Length: 144
Picture 1 (cartoon, rainbow, N blue to C red):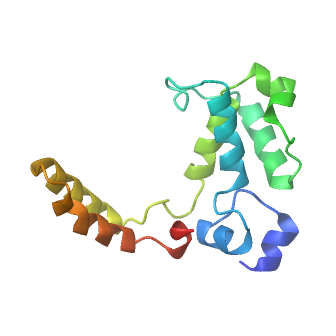
Picture 2 (tube, helix red, strand yellow):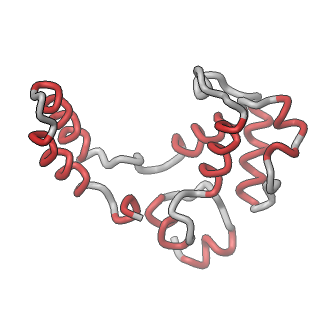
């Protein structure tokens, strides 16, 4: 993937977050920021990511973000107001469609070990070294 690919297509559902962080200024994808703000502003909390929205609305919202034509305010669209759960479903879809997990698979064993050490000891500083090792397994884009 190249810089010109991202500029030409302006896809918000980037094939790899490492590329996204390199070619876009914002360290958090716009679709994630705007959708989570919408969810928080509507007070959707209990099981919000468990309930799916209407599939056609999710696809429509995704295409708006992909094409860069998403409305400045998601609140202004009546079809979104009628199907509030299509917005958190889009966030789920974004993370599900990533080709690589958000957290590197190599970090999972270290994180499990750190959590086990933290639970076994009352002093959480003992597990700090294991958490630090797990953080070093993350890509450079995670540090922005």
